[in-house]
Image 1 (cartoon, one colour):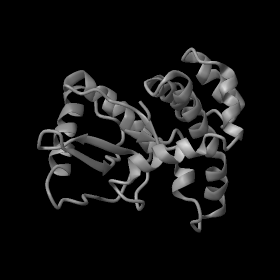
Image 2 (image 1 turned 180 degrees about the vertical axis):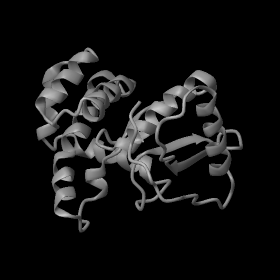
Image 3 (image 1 turned 135 degrees about the vertical axis):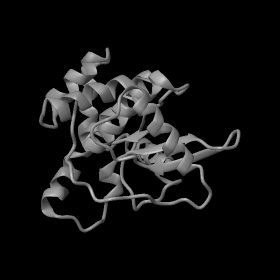
Image 4 (image 1 turned 90 degrees about the vertical axis):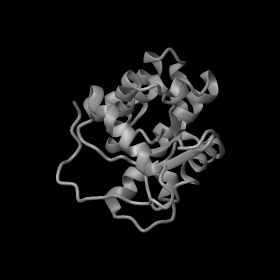
Length: 200
């Protein structure tokens, strides 16, 4: 899964995937994409421009953490960041980053990565690895999953869900999503949202 810590929909999808792990033979690996990278050069409303300017911090910290401790650390770091951002409503900034890094046993000084572009090449590489198979007209979450044939991978945006299904309901959704994503020529299934993010 490719995530940006800012996105509430990616957060809910990630909690669903952790449920799927309990009921299907699946191991989720977390990777970083960036809504700030995705939206560079686009005409955006002023409020969203401000969010995208702030959005560099969390993804830069994630890349620094992965470089320091290996990509597997992103699983717990994303949980630490997402819990604070989406559930506890922290402001984006040093306090958030330092607390999350400390929670997962990393040097809190890695929070300083938020304010430098020193790792942006690695950030863009991670972002591009996730987005290339699905295109740039989608955001996050992006998932790469096993395809219908051995060694094959299918990639897709979504699912956008709320709240995250639990138990066998999570597994059934996974089965269905992978089935449609693995169908040659399948591109889109969508309906209008009538609920905002439900974090439970």
